[in-house]
Image (cartoon, rainbow, N blue to C red):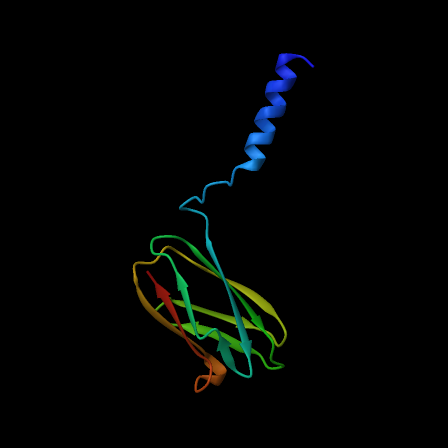
Length: 113
């Protein structure tokens, strides 16, 4: 093997062995489930000043609308459907959300720290 080939192989091995750093502009992913008209977990957490992506899976037969005036978002999810809610970076705080169609039971909180 020539020295160039050895160096190239070492660079490839080093780049795949080391964990890639988390970039501040990469969305923080959160999984959320709706079952029996309740969010699971009811409280989700995310870091401050970083974009957030909430993937909501609806395990109920009924439609639901993820609704939050604090987060300034509304999005419908079909029965047994999945949606992604993309949020801009948020300041630290507590941001309530609910299921618009089952507001008495579908209550949740996004805690940004």
